[in-house]
Amino acid sequence: MRKSIYLVMAMAICSLSYGQYAGQTATNMSAGDGGLGGGEIAALLGPISENRSKNQDVYADFQGSPYTSNEFAMTSMYYGDEDLGKIYYRYNALNGEVEIKNSLRESEQIKSLSRDKKVSVLVDGKKMSFMTFVTSKQKTLNGYLSTLSDDGTYKLFKRIHVKYTEGKPAANSFVKAVPSRFSQYTEYYLQKEGINRIDEIPLKNKKLLKLVDTSKREGLQNHLKENSLNIKNEADLIKAFQFLNK
Image 1 (cartoon, rainbow, N blue to C red):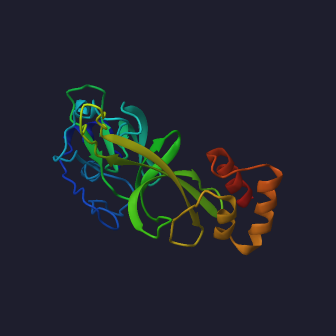
Image 2 (image 1 turned 90 degrees about the vertical axis):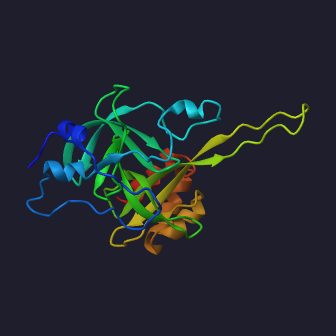
Image 3 (image 1 turned 180 degrees about the horizontal axis):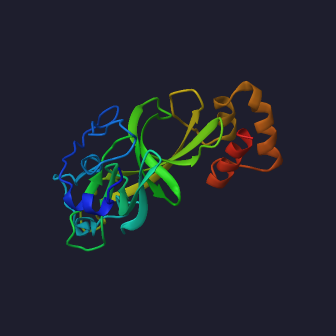
């Protein structure tokens, strides 16, 4: 049974753990008839981490931002394929948190979306959800990926993450202080149908060829060359996956 997401968000008091972990957060979700009750939706929400300020002024003297966008934007929230309604969100790519609000009122408490792998929000029309993936350095991580293409054998995902670098005070009057900064990075990931593993794509045409089936390599190689595609460009990478999934 579907409940109003707005009412549920106003009542949500569930606390979340924000450490690094594998798998998904335990929730009150039940199989049942596939619908979500009010208490179950409440389990998707929780207060933002207590160990950091919710006031963006703390970052005023920093270069860059921990957010992909500092402003909250309206989006749709899903549990599986079920549309739970509209919310406002912004993504903290430093902490890997989707911050959400029911309205744009400054007085409203900011909550964090549960890291449940069935929960997603739309980002630029694409679903972003919590997943487990393997980086090019063979590190298995948990984080948010946006789905760029999922209509064939090869799925394509995008990850935006931010790194923090602490500043340095000026050593003397002849040297400028180095401000603390946030640097944003973009990565892309591939998953082949039937394989429960998501791997980072090295952004070189030849290395992408090594990640696909042998039967697809020659055709993809010719397609990349004939159309002057360079997968360092996101639009060209999407075109390569469109060819793979024909």
